[in-house]
Structure formats: C-alpha cells, structure tokens
Amino acid sequence: MDLTGGHGTMRILDAIDESLIAQLRSAQQFFWLDLVDPSAEDVQSLGTALGWHPLAIEDTQRMGQRPKLDMYDETALLVLQAAVGREPEDENDHPLVEVHCHLSGDYIVTVHGDRFTDLRQVRTLLESSTAPKTERYYVYKVIDVVVDSYFPVLADLDEEINALEDAIVAGAGKRELQETFRLKRLLLTLRRVVVPMRDLFARQADVISDLAGLEGDGHDYFRDVYDHLIRITDELDGHHEMVAGCTDLYLSTVANRQGETSKQLAIVASIFLPLSFLTGFFGMNFDWLTGHVLTGPWSFLVLGLGSMAVSAGLMWWYFRRRGWTGDDG
Image (cartoon, rainbow, N blue to C red; front, top):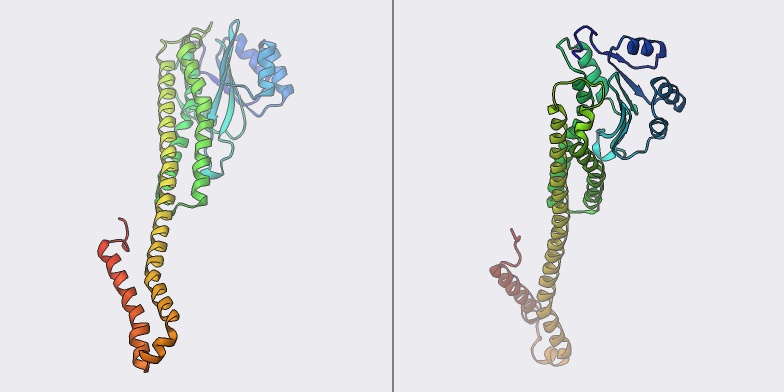
C-alpha cells in the first residue's frame, strides 16, 4: 500500500489516544505510536485496544527481555537493544536501552526508555518527508535507527582505545589497567546483545517482511539491517582484539619498567662492589696503614678516597661503553 496514496501519509503519535487510534484503524491508515516510559496500566489498556497477545503485553510491561521475535497470529513483538552514548563515555555505566516494537499490517508501536532519543529524530525526519513510502519502509526505518545507534558508540570506543594505548606507552599505571578492564566488560556487554540480533535477522527477517497486511516492495530493507549488524559484530570483535592487545601492551610495559629498574639497581650494586672491597681492605689493615703508608693527608686523599673514586669512575665508564646506562630505545 502506497502510504501517500488513497490512505494518506502515515500518522505519527506520541501519546495513547484510543479514539484516534480506533479512527485510524477504521480508515485503514497506517500509524506509528512511539511511547516513552509508559506505565504498566497504559501498556495494558493499549494492548487490550489493539488486541495484543497477553504474553506480548506482559513482556512489554516488565521489560528485561533478550532480543527476540515472537509471532502472534497477525502481529509480532520484536525486542531489540539500542546503544546509548554519553559524554564522557567512561561514565556510561548503562549503554543499552531495550526497545519493544509491536508490528502489524496496521501500525507500529515502539516502547522504550527516555534515554534513547534517536527515534525522536527519525520521527521528525519522517514527518517532514513528502516522498512516497511503503509500510515496510517505515518498519525498516524504525529498526534501522535502533541498529545504527551502535555506530557512534563504536566510534567513541575506537578513540578511547587509541587514547588508552598512548597512555599505556607513556606510563602504564593502575588507572590504565582499570580502563582496560572497563572497556573489555563494555565490549562483552554490547556483543552479548548484538550477536542475538544478528542471528535473529539472519533467520527471521523474511518473517517480518511477510507479516500479514504489511505491504511492501521486497526484502532488501531487512537485508540491509542484517548487513549493518554484521558490520557491528565485526567492529566489536576488532575492538575486543585491540583491548586484548592493550592488556598485553600493559604487561609488556610493566615488565620493561621492572627490567629497567632491576638494571639500574644492578649497576648501583656493581659500582659499590669495589667500594665495599676497598673500604673493607683499609678497615682490616687500618693499624698497619696508619703506621707505614697513610702518614700524611695526601695519602688519605690519594690512596683512600682517590682509589674509590677511580674504581667507581672506571665501572661507570665500562657500563657506558657497553650501553647499559642508556635507554633501550
């Protein structure tokens, strides 16, 4: 059905108006109702008015569902997880928002939390569009906005990982280690919801396209969603490998730092080795030396302090010649 044809353009609603909904359904005009944080009572009354299955009503009231597609006669419940970014990203403890899409040949109803604002933007875009669109296009557009919400988050993660690598090279510390573990947990959280959505569209995209009463123009739209989910999964896997590389880089940097410290301590100990020998030698023969050799101030300065200074200088020169006192790079 051409939505700009005899039935007019799609109506977009942001509140439950049962009389208007009944009028639109009677006129067979396709509509999209976008609900933000509705109460359980609102979901129950809307579900009753639209003839939703009791299980679909219960799932939407309680939320906390995994990504899935449940078919109920001529309606379907599609549960997705959208990504929500935040600045600064390292304070984004809850990057996911659950989105319920109730699909029918007569309507789309989306239910989600107020943190997910991308659907408001697409509402504005669709309201201002005058080009002819099909019902399937509108369903695709809603789903596509949810899926594409991961791309900005992934771009931010890419910048964070690059910054983390630079910070680790500059000086690996406890903060960098904590940031590495945080990014690893975040990537696992995102992958845990993206992979089921990818598998869902791989198996059941045609089920949405062939929904009773949902007129359209082919299955290309939902193949595009599946392609996006594959890209997102690949990027998550790539980021996970980069974070694993950050862990290896951190351990390598710490080991190099410990090795450098051990080398410096070994150099100090090596310099003090002849000094300890000389002071021990002079100490054990102090009585004889003071009576036969160290008879003047010059002898103390030359034979005592001088021999120690010369030995320390020779050791330092030897270490410099071997390249042990410079930077490894």
